[in-house]
Length: 141
Image 1 (cartoon, one colour):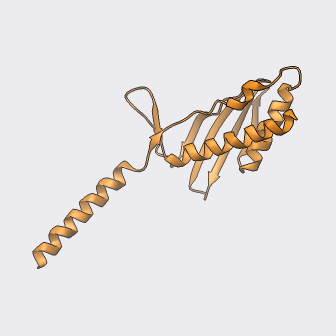
Image 2 (image 1 turned 180 degrees about the vertical axis):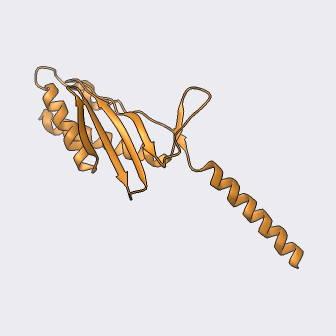
Image 3 (image 1 turned 30 degrees about the vertical axis):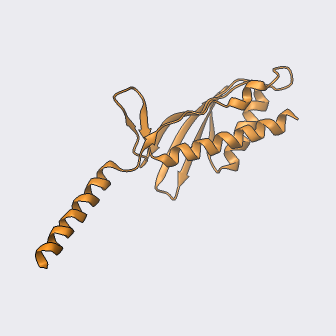
């Protein structure tokens, strides 16, 4: 009986340690503001886009810093444990949410030139994208 227990205990410990090393990761996404394509340049300005991005970030509790005339850097800190920084370059008709940096998010380059990251990154960035798109649609009216 003791031998069987020790064998099972070893299996559990090995399985747990293997799971801890790999961590949870998924392919990283880069939202490109798909709804922004339908914007009329004459009715929607660069300033309107900036305001939509800033309000979308605020709605999701991302901190915003303007890096230059057409780029916003947004930071999301979750439970003082995970940090994500994205760069959002924009024009009057488009924006893109680009990964810039992270802490405790298992960010890794892959051999095929893509990147993997904790799945929550994609959730947080997609939610940010939806909030920005919502603000754009409110401004377009």
